[in-house]
Image 1: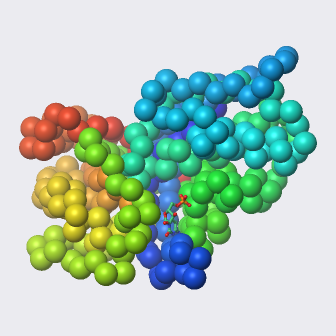
Image 2 (image 1 turned 180 degrees about the vertical axis):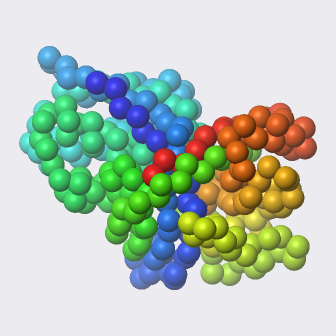
Amino acid sequence: MEFHAPAKINLSLRVLGRRADGFHDLESLMCPVSVFDTLEVTRRVEGELEFVCDDATLPVGDDNLVVRAARLFCGARGIEPRVSIKLTKRIPHGAGLGGGSSDAATTLLALDRLFETRLSRVTLAAMAAELGSDVPFFIYESAAMIRGRGERVEPVAFPHALPLLLIKPPFGVPTPWAYSRWKDACEIPGVPYAAQAFPWGELVNDLERPVFEKYIFLADVKRWLLAQPEATGALMSGSGATVFAVLRSKEDAVSLGERVAREFGADLWLCACETVG
Ligand code: C5P
């Protein structure tokens, strides 16, 4: 069976404060987008859990999130993990697009289908929370308001297919580092951080402050995007390093993408896609 593991963007991300356990309380509107990794999951007659991935830079051992998800699921249900999982990556890592989290959540959803265990989303999301803060969101396969450290997921209707251009430089941003700098970070004069109002809500990300301090390139990309006629808004996703533009129309992605590459270099990862509510 083949399953799609979509990327996400954070349309809003408010950090409310640091908690005693070291995590941060959040309020974030997250939305899946139409770019996805693929998981091919099959039952094996004999043998152990088998995991292969087309991206050689990812670990395929027990610390891979897909392997951890499969072991967690099978352990909790008392099932032998006799499955083969083949992961095809399209979502870059260190991107703020939730690729690894989505792969993990999709593994739980896939095994629930494969073994016909029919677990509720609440049960699967509780398992997902053990794997990472962003993982429960992907269990609901919907746009959602996220609270707590990410484990409180309230699915919301988001019937707007916003056309997007995702832009990621060759470097990634480590998420723990971004959060650790949140409290003490300052705004850089001339960089736009203010919430951008739309009929459906607002674009704003509290992690831009710490991340832009170190990765000024990302602030430059955002500022440049906001000055382009094709873009109605621009924001960093999650803890970066992806910056996305909300476009007036889908067709604008090609011309804008060409100019982005000319302005900032051809080694950027560019992806035209849209939000899926
Ligand atoms: O939960 P996950 O492993 O994805 O989080 C990675 C890191 O990001 C955490 O170890 C923590 O440093 C930071 N984080 C946080 N508050 C959150 C989510 C993540 O401080 N709500």
